[in-house]
Length: 404
Image 1 (cartoon, rainbow, N blue to C red):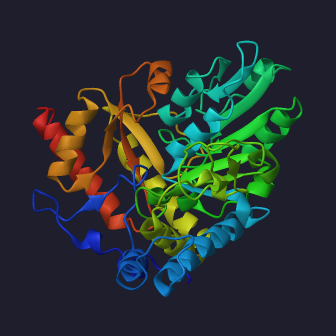
Image 2 (cartoon, rainbow, N blue to C red; image 1 turned 180 degrees about the vertical axis):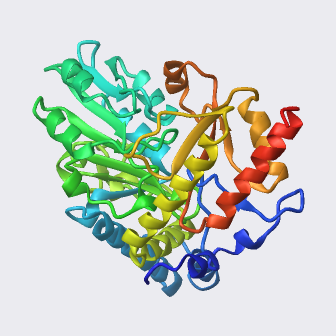
């Protein structure tokens, strides 16, 4: 469908609601989670009504229908992100589990081995690597908040085994040059892992174009349900990996007097009863994304982002953090006279939902010399009228602080 914002917005029932203060909901917390369109809600409800059964080995109609939902979703994801083949898609609970799974495969690394991370990474892309014995090296950022390619060149070495980096930063919204990073990493034989938690809702993903080795993401940041996501990995690497979780559905043979025989990929990584309802929602979310006119959507987002920046820059008490042109619709700022939590509370009283705090990015906060920010993040269903309401909220902030 071509993009008409008002038609698009009407597909999200929650956006017609009011907040706890009786104000119309203005939802600017899309980097944390996006809202669900009616078609995704309906797909999950439909699955529960007509094909709610466990997948794998059910020799009856409901189970076979559930199996079709399950495997067709894998195929549609593979096509959407341009994976080489569907078996390179592993279902999980989201990007966090995907990163933990990947880290679990490298427990043999020693302190001589090195893992490179960007200072802006989310905690989910820091903590799993810190549990390993490898040495972690941190890439700094430029004055505009970009990935420092010169620093990367200095820190990359023959000891580098992994670089794990977000495609889009969850605090500054910076779009990192993934293809270039992957190409450079591969020159020393290092693997390139992409945290794509913020990626799917900003346009089509092509993992082959990126030249990454692994890509993880979550459905709930791209108009899908919580608790479901997937990992893409090159088959040549996945075939060497060991199961992360152990349980039913991942083996061809279990015995007390013989070695266990695990199934081929992807089945060996999907133990237990999967979240088939979530997968039904994920499939519909992918179909929803596929229908969008992304050039028009991105133009709409740029217009809103530009206007938000204008409004914030007109307020002498506000500092926008590291603004630059290579940014998605994520804007973080601080107020010279108010704590981020206080700002978020005042915004809430005017119906505006924003995120406040360190955003699971404490190393970045330390690098910036601050304790936290207010983060305002856009989705295609946000409107110019909602953006203008920020002026009302900021006037109220000034009133509460006695500055007006």
